Length: 74
Image (cartoon, rainbow, N blue to C red; front, side):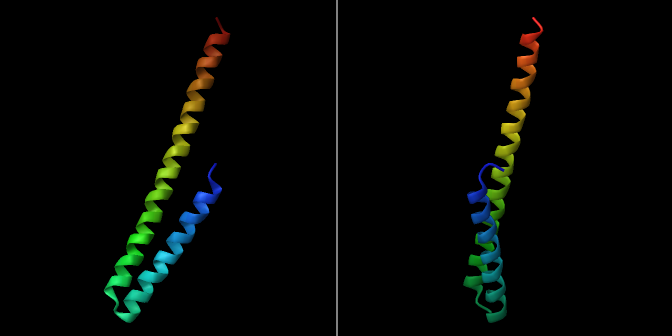
């Protein structure tokens, strides 16, 4: 969770998007509803991308550590 600012922006976008979607449903404004869905979906995608990046970094660190230990045994 290195990018706290980015993650908080994603969470904000998710909430705002859900609000727009709800507003669009209540007022029968299909354009606002679609805008909200798109914003919420974008936030979900960015969150998953950040999570994947974190997993890749952790995996790289694990591999680097294993190789380091292997080199120490030589």
